[in-house]
Length: 151
Image (cartoon, rainbow, N blue to C red):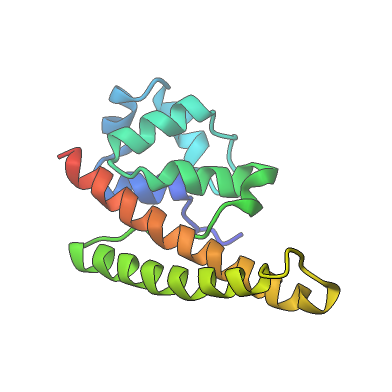
């Protein structure tokens, strides 16, 4: 890994405008532990520390990113980018609505006969991928609203 590679924990702290010393004052860990957690191949970060980081840094997506990176079940979670503006959130909602409407209509058609036959598996896989993307867009919007309401 590159020497200047930054972890998601460090990036979130830096975007929050906090030094390691400032963050360690409010997190339930020592400064040396925080430094180890932020190292590119560092110590695994306990869930309670990640929760505290997400709250302190006002980055609720950190919890999802943490799970995607560290938990074997993370591969089943949607890919999500945290919206930075109301426009980002609005666009995510628009995309989610349009994608969901199209995908759900196709799912309805696919299941009209009560089963998914082997020749329909490719279509079903594509629909599953679309619905996962829609869920990620909804999660983007929800995260933005949570962050705004926490202010």
